[in-house]
Amino acid sequence: MSQPEINLPDADTIVKTGVAYARDLAERTISTFVVAASGVGIVAGPADMFHASFWQTMGAAGVAAAGSLLKGMVARAFGSKNSASLAKGV
Image (cartoon, rainbow, N blue to C red; front, top):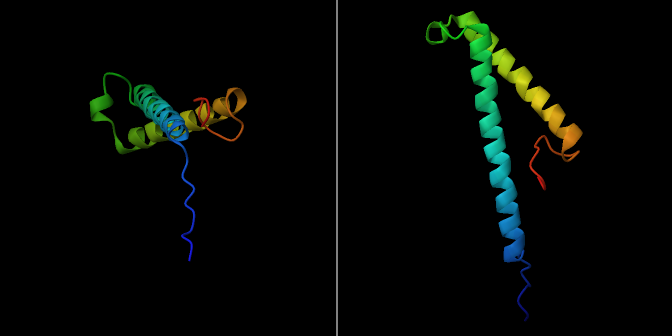
């Protein structure tokens, strides 16, 4: 009775996938921070950002969501057509 063959990816493929994932994650984390901070700055204003009202906070969240949508659209236009990331190979 023969054992079933296990086909695992080679180490080079795993490293390339890990690097692409790390680039994608870093890009998304940084862009989310920038867009969210911009949203708070636009909606609540830099002087009142620590005392924002409920509606100012919701407005900032809306600006952040719109910024993320725009970033994804730009990434599709300039990056891979099947990804919302500008990182190559994602």
